[in-house]
Length: 490
Length: 101
Image (cartoon, rainbow over all chains, first blue to last red; front, side, top):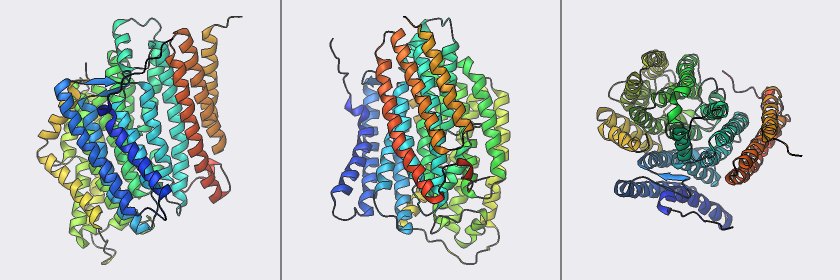
C-alpha cells in the first residue's frame, strides 16, 4: 500500500502558522527567559503577528485574483477571497484586543505571558475556521478556538465569577462540540465524506433515498453552531460568560468567535448543504425569530452593561443569521459585511467598558455611566457613537449592515422575517438609547474621571473612525464583501 | 457471527442519548463532564462503523482527531473544575449562582 502525502500550499495556511508560531515563540521565551518576559514584548509579539498576517492576507488576495480560489492539503483547506477577508478582520480584532489587554494588564498588575499565548492560539483556531473546507477541520478550528478561550475566561483569579463563568462555558461548549461532531459523523454516513465540496457534489448528483441521516446530521450541526454563536434557545451560557470573563477577553470572544463561527456556518450551509436549503430554512426561521426577539427583549431588563452587551450580541447574531437564511450571493455578502463591521465595533465598545470597569473589573452597572459624556465628552461621545452604530443608526456601519441583511431577506421572499427582525431592532433601540441618554444625564459621580491610557484610546478612536467613515461611505467594504462571497456561492 | 452495522449505529445513538440525558439532568460538574466524554465516544463508534460500511479509511483517521480533542478538553476542563473547587469545595453546578439575570 502506498501512502500519498498531500501537497501543502504554504501561502494558504501562512496566517494560521504565523499565529500559532508566535504563540509557541512566547511559550519558549517564557520558558527560557531569566525572570519574566516583559509585558510589552508579549503585546508587540501579538501586534507583529497580526500585522504580518494582514500583510500575508494582501498577498493571498492578489494570488486569488491571479490564479483563482484553490484548495490544499487534500482539499481540507481552501484559499479564497472569503477566507482572506475574514482572516484579515480576525487579525485586526486580535491586534485591537492585544492593545486593550496591554493597558488592562498594567492596571490589574497581571504579569506573565499566558494571556497572550492563549489569545494567539485561540485566534489561530478562528483563522482555521474561516479556511476550513472539511467538517473535521471546522471541528478542530472550533476546539482550538474554544479551549484557549475557556482558560482566558477563567483568567481573573481574584473574582469568583471568572472561574464560575469558565466552568459554565466549558461544560456547555463541550456539550455543543459533541453535538456538532455527532452531526458531522451522521453527515459522513449519509454522504460518504466529510469534505464540504464532496458533500455538495454528492447531494447534487444523487437522490438521497433515506434522508433521515442527512437531516439529523445537518440539524445537529446547526445546533452546534447555534450554541457557538449564542442563538436562542442555545444562548444561556452567553450572558454569564460575558459578565464573568475579564472584559478584554469578552471583547475578543464577541469578535473572533462570531467571525469564525459564521464563516464556517456559511460554508457548511451554502457550499455543502446549499442544494438542501429549503429543508433548513424553517429551522433557521425559528432560530432567527427567537434570537432577535428574545435577545432584544432580555437586554432591556439588564442592569449590568456586560450582560446587556451579551444580549445585544445575541440580537446581532440573529441579524447575521438572516443573511444565511437568504442563502443567496447577496445574503452571504450581507452576512460577511455585518460580521466584519461588527467585530471592530464590539472590541472598541468593550475597550470602553474595560476602562469604566476600573481596578478589579467591577464597575459594570449602568449607574457608572451616568454623566460620563459630561465629564469626559470625548470618551462619552465615542461610546455614544459605538452604541448608535450597534443600534443601526444612519451614518454608521451598523445601518448599512442591517439594511443589507434585511434587503437580502426581502429579496429571498422573507418579508415576515424581515419585519420581525425590524421589530426586534426597535426593541433593542430602547436599551441602546437608554444607555446613551445615561451618558448625557446629570453627573452623579462628581468629577471621578477615568484615565484613558494611550493604546486603549487609540483602539477606541480607531473603532469609532471605522464605523463613521465606512458608515458614511460603505462602498469599499461592501464591494470587498461582495467580491469575497462571489466565488464560493453556487 | 456477523453483526449488522445498523446495530452499532443504534448502540452509538443510545450511548449518545445517555450522555446527553446525563448532561442535562446531573448536577455535578465532573459527572456532566463524563457525559460529554461518553457522547464523544459514541461519535467515535459512529465514525468507525460508517468507515467500515463505506470502505473509507478517513472515518477511522477522524477518530484519532476526536480522541486528541477529548484529551485536550480533559486537561483544560479538570483545571477549571479544580479552580472552582478550591474556591467553594463543591463541584455542584447548582451552587454556581453568582452570575444570574
